[in-house]
Image 1 (tube, rainbow, N blue to C red):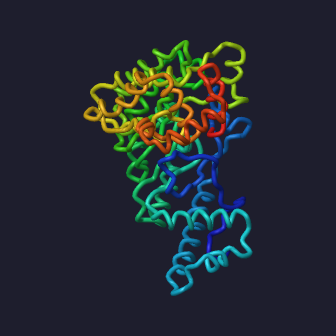
Image 2 (tube, rainbow, N blue to C red):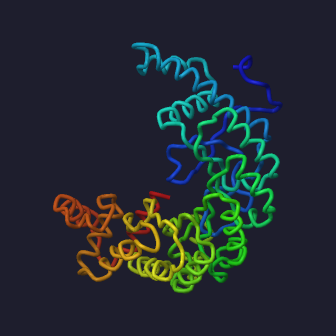
Length: 388
């Protein structure tokens, strides 16, 4: 490998971060930073206790070149008549170190996925110097000129501090989608969960991304205000989204893993979680107050109660909200059956209640788990822990 790849001082091999958006499942993961520079949000334990660091630009470029090297090997092997079987691909890994194997498998998975998109890890790539990010993006474009999308997570606080000229430079270099975890547009909620941001800065950052011609995904987290701020969370977040008009609004239902600060708040009675019916009501209130925007609503996460709550605003609003309205009016016994079926993975959408085979599976799960209206909230919280 050393004779094929330019040396980088202190380089310890290809790296992968721990997370990516569901929409980036087919992307090449390219780690630019490690962990989260803020790392104080009460609901998040992903990076807790892990120090933040920025990888040297030359190390990231080394990763890019390493993936390119393995892609060339993989494609050459696949093009040989009769040699594209598992044994031949496995032979390419012989003698590789763990980081090299990680690079190889990243390359192989990306080849199989079409090599159309790249996701920059970890939690906030936009915190690095614009010149450094431009250098990485230009290297990506040089080595993989056919890539169609380069995406990153970012914090609003970081984006708000970047000049419009630098944002335009990032867009020109190839960064064409950014995911921002707004979570809430309510200052009272943002302050309580220690998000380190306020509503106005969220709006400034979102508009800055849009102004640069970069696609913007904003995340809304129903339930983040608890029962205490449920309506405020829905209404103020909708108002912020209306001012930004992001390309995508992605729904991420709150789940509270044991050990995070918000879990301790629950134990102490400081925070009162919503149950699934209340979560549905908050989501409906949020959606009903989106106005004057053309965002695509996405419900692309397993924690969401309704995966079919998707569509293009404003024309699809009635279709987007219809499953929630129906759920809130059906018989309580059907509601309970749907909650159990959804949280066990039997149902993915409310219409699955019409499938008698799935209905019977959900009934068996309800009986097996002994779920009733008296214990459903505790049972749901326990089930959601498995998907965090």
